[in-house]
Image (tube, rainbow, N blue to C red; front, side, top):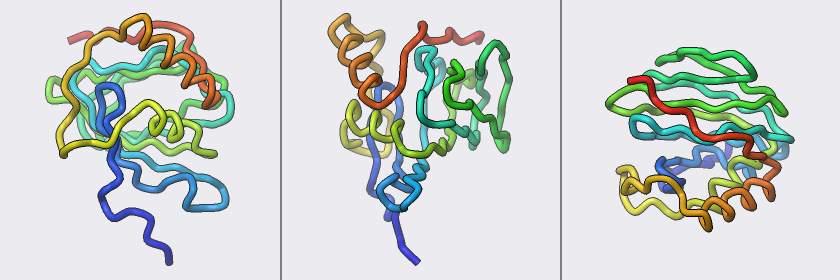
Length: 160
């Protein structure tokens, strides 16, 4: 048995806190398991992963997911999958924020989190950042491209 997580592998990634539970480097198949926490309204831009499916398992909070042309309301204990090459995004709809696990392979998304994020300074969320500057947006698009992720559109707005 190999212990791959001792609880100290956390990153502040954009407006979220991401705990790298199982790093892709831990196994031959490069399976990556990440636990996320985000505030109300958090949403990534509409995007696709060219090399990996992304599985989301909601732990707490309410989310709205867009996968392809469909929208889904998802809550604790529910799982949704975004196949590779299918546009997708989510929006945290709960006032208290939300948490979830993502599972990907071969770990390109984890690579993006590590490239763009910074070590979490504490157990909380990073200070709210707001919309990226044009320079930050350009850097994020380049980092996504380097990890086989393509941004297609803006973030979702919360309904609440």
